Length: 294
Picture 1 (spheres, helix red, strand yellow):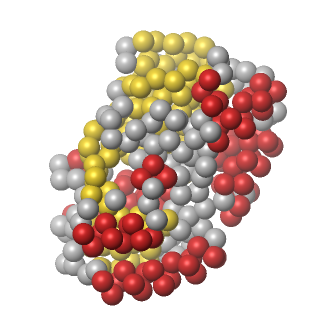
Picture 2 (cartoon, rainbow, N blue to C red):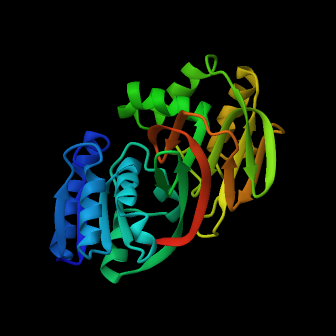
């Protein structure tokens, strides 16, 4: 087996992104011993990563977006906790939110892989009734999940602009729901506009959902948004690009180690840009559970 597994999502992102990375891919293959795989359908990256990890590979290079990263991570974990792999990322997706905390570009990623320069990062685990999911970026419920569903269905090729359009279209139709969550032993019950549990700062491309997030601190950067009128949410929305939405009195931010849903119910959840329907019961952070070429 070659040292690196290269997983390429040929459908990720814009045509321009795919064209731009063709030259980089050729350069990478010439310099680094890679076993190359092209994804052919949804969750194929998970299958490839799982098989390669079980065969002994511990280095995975990803040409794709947040969704491809999500698939790779969920193909490797929970087995990966015993011997954490390293991932290298060349972003070709429409959002590419996860990598913004690491200031990665083509040259940085390529040099880091060649020089085996890595850093650890955390993984957040979403425990649901039927399955566990693993996240390097964001887990969100409520309005954010509704926006993500709408964007992925109708505006997936619009990149970050697709999220903005989806927010404006869905703002006046969303209905808040009341339920209890427990954050590090403190139980809170009220109607929520949305809840967001973050490992990195950005979502939807350039929206700084959690300015207090640090993917290496062993904490879940939590953003709790109380029920508000559409007009108040609309007023707060432009501030999300700078992280200043967290200054509004109806937004509470925390650093947590454990989140519990006291009454698990089936709901839409956005996790690393992907949409799932699940009954969440808990969010747990695993410190230093993954390495990334930086």
